[in-house]
Amino acid sequence: MKALVLPALIAINFVYAGAAFAQMDHSTHGAATTSATAAAAPKAQAIDLGEGVVKKVNKARGTVTLAHGALPNGMPPMTMAYKVKDKAWLDQLQAGQNIRFATDPADGGMTLTRFELVK
Ligand SMILES: [Cu+2]
Image 1 (tube, protein in one colour):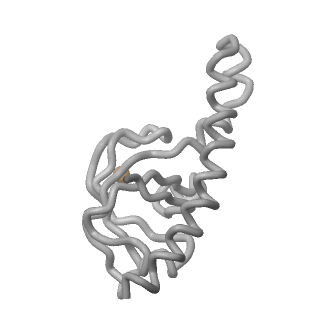
Image 2: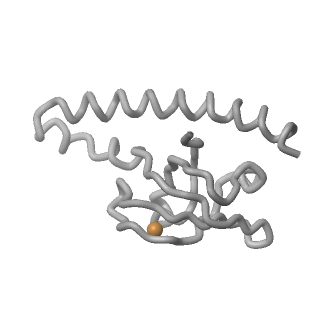
C-alpha cells in the first residue's frame, strides 16, 4: 500500500511545493512594501498556507480532521473536520502527518483546496 501511495505523494508535493514557493515569494514581496501597497492587495492573504496535524481521515464522510494553528484567514487554533476539494486526497492523508494547507474562502474556509506534507 505504501509503495503505491508514495509516488503519488511525491508528485503532489512537487506540484504544491512549487505553488507554495510562488505564493511565499509573492506575499514576502508584499510585506516588504508599504502598508498602503499591502492593503491594496488583500487577496494575497487568502492564499497563505496554514499549518496543522492530521488527526483523522473519514472516507465515509469525505472529511479530514485537522488540529490546526492560527490560520491566515483569521481562524484561531482548533481541531475541526474539513471537506476536501479532491476525494483522492483522503487516500493520501494519514493521521499523524504534519501538513500545510489552504482552504476555500467561498464556504468560510471549511474545504481544503490544497495541501502539502511537512517533514
Ligand atoms: Cu478551524
